[in-house]
Length: 340
Ligand code: BTN
Image 1 (spheres, helix red, strand yellow):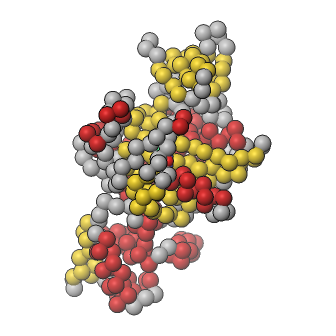
Image 2: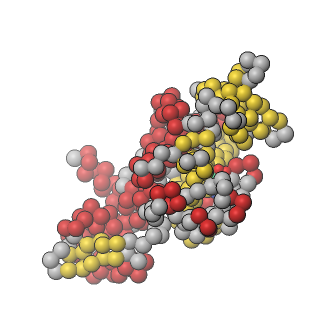
Image 3: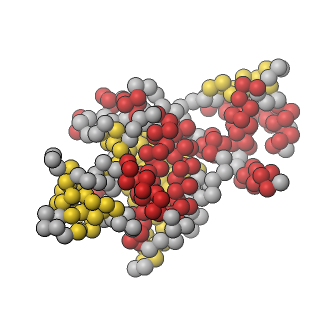
């Protein structure tokens, strides 16, 4: 009874197209009849047909046959909010609302504005391309059209500003899990938030927050993943440093599938962080993090601090043992791993 209730709630808030795509995906090769779709959605068969035609226009290959009814045979490589919602199903927070832009300056700008307008947490904004994508430390983020996943999530966590590093750590862990599950690659984390494959960066996280002294108003969690960028498409200055999932696996990756896996992981980890269970995530993060145990130099603005990366503090800060034997806490910066 409870499950039925949850399904009704989900159906009530997602669009007709999302429900059609969800029904087609769950029917698989058996297909689903127009009559059944019309009944489930509470619309006429003609209205179902009109929506199917619209989805076909977008590139969804939907077969209509007297034997199987409607079957989804193939889908386009585009991010479509209804399709993402259909694939994602019900999440508690992250992905309750998904918006896709063909192009924007930066998805984090869009989410920042939504945050100031009072939109509820969990909204995710994707862009197929960003014209001013930004990375950490004021760097530009290369965001070519339809080649990656460029998105930002609005969160309103019950955390003090100093604790929000936990969200970056949780996001990095969720990213590793999602990439591993979809590609069988073995991504590593370079503290605090770079995801590397075979030593080259494949994804990054930018956490921006609005806070008062002791209260976080909101966090904009920006994620960039180089998914289907080919080696020659990277600008020359990035070629030695960056890679993509396509380059590393040798094949194109279903971006919508990766996006929904990741949103599901992020949702689970966000709830864990909010419930005060960060330690479970920190343990997993430490298993993926190749910075721990290494001698590193971290540049923070004009200052540099060097030492052995020993462990992660409960709030997500990195604990470095300096050459003088002191422990130094570091919460951000640019890490260089020293040769040993
Ligand atoms: C980094 O490693 O420097 C962080 C990169 C974060 C890039 C993402 S792409 C989506 C979101 N919008 C932005 O402008 N930046 C983040």
